[in-house]
Image (cartoon, rainbow, N blue to C red; front, side):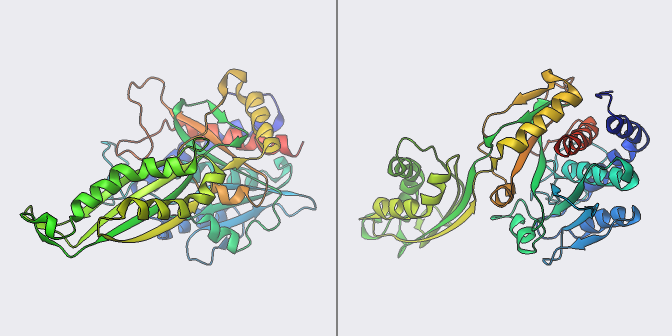
Length: 396
């Protein structure tokens, strides 16, 4: 058992001894019954019921899923803890008793763990009001996986209006369970989505010179656009433009009239992110000039990088070192992944923290967004210990 000897840490450890198995069971319930972005109705109800039973008042978001609740209403500042509720549109390939019961939907990003860690922390302070050092708000957010993200719905409902800081945890399979990853400044990347629709008259593959060879035009876009965008942004900016879906034609001897290409566009740079929509459009027109193909671009400006506040991140790091020891706290690299937690850190000081979930006895590294993704469930207790210690550190 970890601990720093404080009365709060001792109380949390004792509470986890009593309720840890129940929290793991709840995580498995969420894992077996995942819900897609914007459809987290049962998950929202379950969280609300648990909070209601603990005597807390919940507030549903106006979009119909997600909620928030306060623990404490004393004079003074308030900090927020955020969790995300939604799952991914992908199959669960694990052979476990809590495997997803919903075909094509899976908690392959750890949001079930995030939800239970935040819920467990809220329940602890609800049952132990004498241990609460300050005012807390717990935000259970829908639609993190949908661009530009359900965080905007939380902000539109003014759910952070009177909060002075916000912290969230994200599962990190690169780190062993019991290890905490922190990083001041940019910790994730920006991510956009785009669809390119190419249009031509079609024709016979025996005479491609008499029409617009739309497949060839699509191939040129796929191979040339990433490099052209990078060149236009300049060497000081990194960008990953990767096509994940290509749909064109139904027969090998027919040049189609339409080709649809879908891609994600990522950059660790806030400056590059702000320029990307215009740069992509100009690059496309340059590449297609002379091909005869018409082009329609649907570019969705997604989320900016998450930029961690230095002071809040240092509080998290101090709390983690005090709770787990200096050797269990590491500085992580800026990720190419994206998260709509970025919208929160543009409004209030915040920190997004990596929670190690890898089982050190396992030889299999289970990556996020993979069908076999799973966690060492001891990470749930670690997450609750971290959040309670951070809360104590912040209000000290």
